[in-house]
Length: 81
Image (cartoon, rainbow, N blue to C red):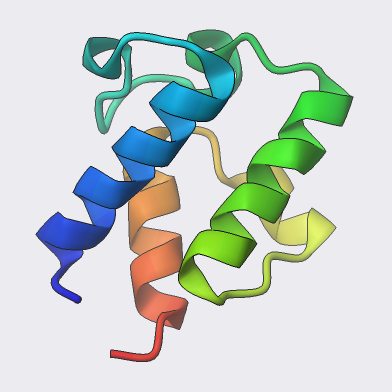
């Protein structure tokens, strides 16, 4: 899977799961604000990403991921390509 395909899939699953328009999911956008996440829904998002891409994300790592661009880079680095 290319990084572009991974980004497209991420946008698709997050927009569907959190019922937001795909346009709000941009690389520089804040994840929590864009998806209106509280701590519980943040856990749901992490589980969704882990399940979709077969990666593991630790709680300490989640805290350092603020934007969608950071999320894309993080997930892509850990995927089995």
